[in-house]
Length: 137
Image (cartoon, rainbow, N blue to C red):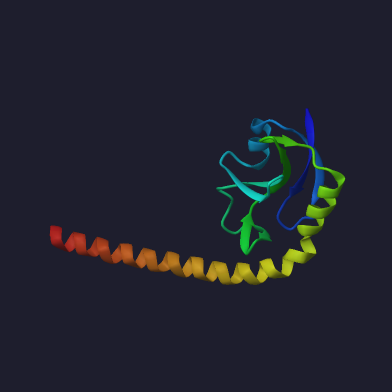
């Protein structure tokens, strides 16, 4: 049985699509390791845990969702078709123009911090390795 969901890719508008409700298909569509984020008791975001660090998509509750994700309705712990009202609500919530500017600002800041942290960790590892090699010698 197919269900209606919202399919949201980075730098693309929200799409309404029909997909099989089984997890095997969702994993093939999104990625093998899934991240589930509850929007409310009846709606959930399913995203890829291992999405690329530079693949910023949308902002939800002051967090960045990376990579492609879907928004799906839940009823009795099962994925079900979204109602027209839910589709309108979440399509509007995740409109690209609402998120694009915020994403670009956040992306620059986030990547600067990320690469600074990577550089610091690399330098720390080099110092630790030099200490080990001098002790061995």
